[in-house]
Length: 137
Image 1 (spheres, rainbow, N blue to C red):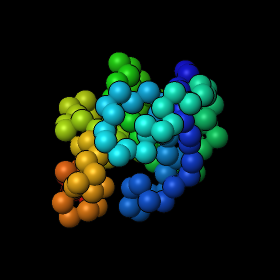
Image 2 (cartoon, one colour):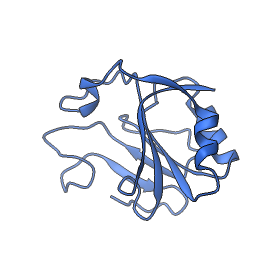
Image 3 (cartoon, one colour):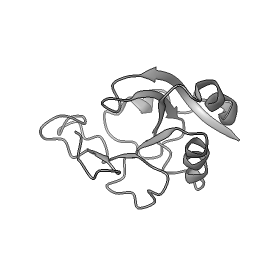
């Protein structure tokens, strides 16, 4: 299974309390004004997704997808991560996302410079723990 990524990295900031394997997907079509993605668009490289997950398996990671709502088979990537024992989080610029079967966390909302990023008091973005229903940020 190939996945086109701009980058992947370990993070502690995307999901509070979770050690994350954060995947920045290439190809976002949304073009949100001020989004950092625009300057890197088209520079991604294909990686073997299954092999990447195997390197991090059994180490307590949550796989965080930064983008991917434009991929018709994104749920296949979520499912593989779940099948390998990972928690899964998905950041989408869309205002809502209904296909949550394999997700533990969901962030919705396009970046709007005037409202600020996730965590800002005025932000339109929301991060929800789907297992508890709690809005985290």
